[in-house]
Picture (cartoon, one colour):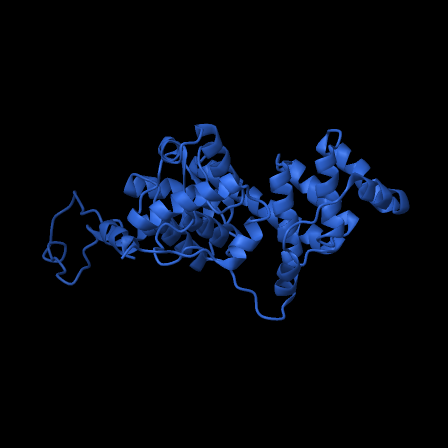
Length: 338
């Protein structure tokens, strides 16, 4: 009997409105191959098997990466949770009666608006007219009929206030992402999360931009420029910078010591170093270096006197004296243990 897999209804409901039929077909095919044999297909393989152009495959994969359903992996792509073989789509299931559940109920298919209907709304509502004018400035282009329809849907369909939609467009422009798919994905996500006031949007954007800023700093320290971060890497960065408030200079110092000890970037090893420093309340590199110097002095072997007559006392060897010869190696071994 052949194996089967399912897509969550909420996944189909959400992305069915945004993804094209081709995008869905390509995603389902690469997902089925991955679930069947754990293989990530190359774009050329997909194009050949489905008898479509490589550009169509590339566009579809780019869409799913933007939607964070897939992740960029070097020059290719991967699924966000490569270790999970039992789940197809890991989506949060809203509680019955919650605001998110109620929002998802009304987010079916985006309604179609005639140009005359949009023009009428702008003529009787100054805020809608103002929204369209601001959109042209923010997006730096003359809006097409489909642009008008999309932006108006954010207000009429999703119920987002005009000022929130303007903030959404500004946020997308700052990220360099102003495509229709991206903007509509973000708008639906904000509606799902209940981000429907100026204050809540401002707070959400602040958190997102801070997160992106922190990730950017750590990526620079670790020299990760040509690929997306994995979920595990994002968790480590969130823990260090977000939860524990560890400074970039300490992260850089921990990275240097990690590479010196292991010869590579080891996130687990680096995390042990940072946890150790945090427990000792170190906040600067100077404090770390001072502690290391004290450790060296405290544990350096006592030099024997070269001059003077030796007595039975300075010839005496204490058999209970600790042996520090392998001390550094023991610490390294302890830190590498999971």
